[in-house]
Length: 284
Image 1: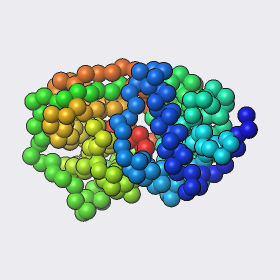
Image 2: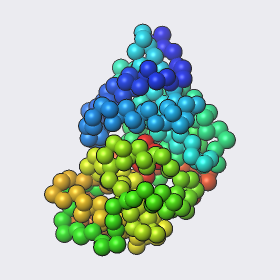
Image 3: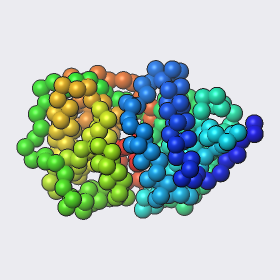
């Protein structure tokens, strides 16, 4: 194929957004795993613009005949590498293009102390990620309208002064703070809830988008607050691995349904305990 792989530029952002939509739509058609809920294009562009600004060395595109047909985005946070995005247009899949893009993104984390990937159940993607030497931990998801859930009185909306708490908790559970990544989630409409001194959760796009806490009791309370925040709307809780039984129990009590074919976490090196923790697909 006449395909060029090169560093991502600001002019590529819309093309990356479009190929991301096409790739996830193709995954849903092939596996039945639902495409993420639609979001305004300007919000989707923030998800690409932000890592392009913070981690330009981890952002790559594949271009064919002037059009973006694939993209990889990797981020580094205090020595922790994560694959934020790897997409190839369905018409260009199974050609080796994904492996080439992943190799460029992986090189960005060559000196990282730890690595994290949140993988879809696509067998081709899992095979490619395992080629990096990471360990695989299966994950499930839960979804539904929560029933009989009350938010703990201690949990409150987040405030600007909570940044230090969130950084401290991030360091405890994964060894690296999210920093401005959380600001970007809030910027595109995710709600921040805080258990003072103990943890935080963000909720948006019909799901729990990030949760970290010092202990499982606080994590469970934050999850209850997020479920209560959904009201009568369907909510998703993703990336439930074997280490997050506290979350499984809360989802079960709330009457959510479990989906066993969700995907997997792949990790390597010093990532911290990653528990109690529910990662974010874009910011890990």
